[in-house]
Amino acid sequence: MRRVLFSLWIMSSLIASSGTACAQGNPRGTAKLALKGQSVSVEYGRPSLKGRTAQGLLGQLGQGEVWRLGADKSTTFTTGVDLVFGGLTVPKGEYSLWALKEAGGWKLVFNKQHGQWGTEHDAAQDLGGTPLKESKGAKPEEMVTISLAKEGDGGAITIQWGETVLSASFKAK
Image (cartoon, rainbow, N blue to C red; front, top):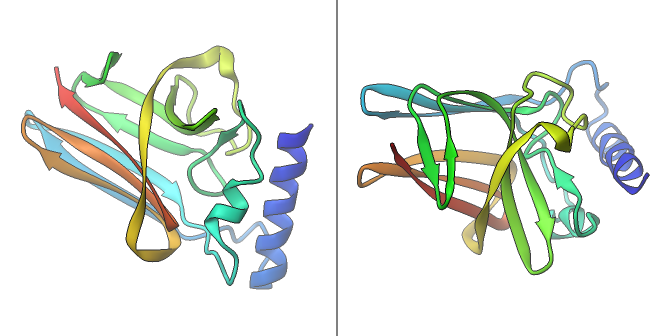
């Protein structure tokens, strides 16, 4: 119930602050990376803070609740190569991405469903998750920004909103 109320609050805040209807939605963003000749990508909605703080918005989530890592349609993670995030193997394919709030931090969750509305998370479809490192950004990001960067024989995913930065490294299998 808290998750539904939080989602409704976020949506009404976005509508009230932007003056636009939900049907228009938020701008979409894409991040891409090539590994072993294959593409790894993330496609996501980019809500704006519009005078609010990400810490305040994300702080409304209770332990065990998920954030859709953007807005509107679920965030989609696509990989053409098997990846390893810590102890989690993510087979090539398409997934929705979520951030699970845990005691003392966040976990990046890969869900086997994708393309659904961003608040429709079915935990029974979770492939698994990996811890996210949390840090403070050098400069705040007004809109949710997800990036993929090459790191050795793998890469890193970084999610930033306001001053909040969440990141995880991965390797190509």
